[in-house]
Image 1 (cartoon, helix red, strand yellow):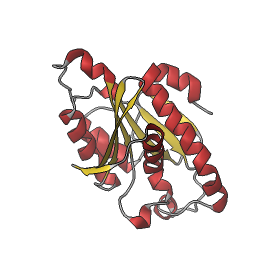
Image 2 (tube, helix red, strand yellow):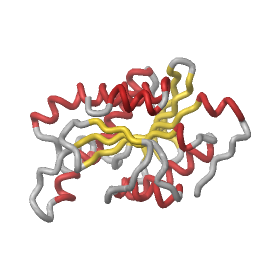
Image 3 (tube, rainbow, N blue to C red):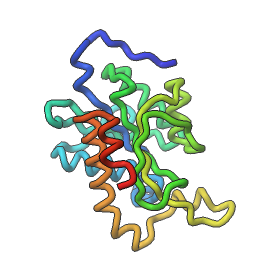
Amino acid sequence: MFLVSLQKGIILDMKYLIVGLGNKGNEYENTRHNIGFKVADKIAEILGTPFQITNFGLMAEGKYKGRKVLILKPDTYMNLSGKAVKFWIQKENIPLDKLMIITDDLALPFGTLRMKMKGSDAGHNGLKSIQNELQTQVYPRLRFGISANFSEGRQADYVLGNWTEEEQNKIPERTTQFANACLAFVFSGIQNAMTGFNGK
């Protein structure tokens, strides 16, 4: 199991890493698989902090009620997301319970919010990469439902496809809700965030 050094003591309790999963490139910008990037953008907007090019992606650093918040959009493509996550939790000495991964989920209806403390990768390539790199399934994740409205054999086209007009119209409200759920996680912990936001 991947372990994080606790040498800096209490400082670690005030530092969080939020990672939105997606694929780099303009062709993927508005695809279902990139909703993690959209939520990360909304969090950075709320905190008033810009993204900067850094190791393994784009990073925004902000403060939320006294906590330092690092917001990462990996540039490794989805199936290598774990390399970016591992690099940054090592570099910043972030305990796994202060990590939040934002990802799309085919098993949930569109826009459904589900935060969990742990779980399997459920066939998601980004989560699979993170699990392989960290050697554990025990890390917080926030799933954005994208539904599964595709015919047999068309899953890849669906997740890499663009939102419908109806879905696109709802994205701003849903990304704001997901951003607020992440900030609740930072301020009041995952249990309170799950109680306050799951299913809403």
